[in-house]
Length: 114
Image (tube, rainbow, N blue to C red):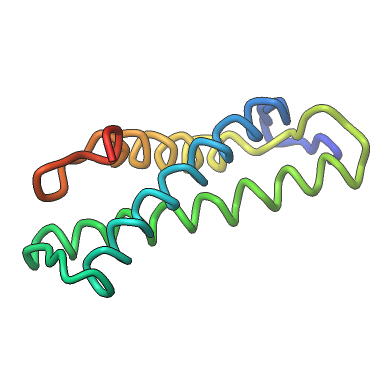
């Protein structure tokens, strides 16, 4: 990506890939909990179910965004992207929210342990 006049921040593709991998792990764990809820009769309380669905939705949004950035680096055959400062702030906020979600307690377990 070209660097424009607005201040931009370099983000390494290796960092993007690491966060993407961690995010994929969260979605797999959430999907497992949701499968248990809907198919195995291990019912979650409404609050836990709502939290699980919210976490999955937020994490999937982050995954789509990160995958697009990683794809851009691969297509351009570069090791980093330059993002506007505001976009980096949004990305950091999403990553922070997903990180907190990874430690969230749903039912009797948290995603870290499941």
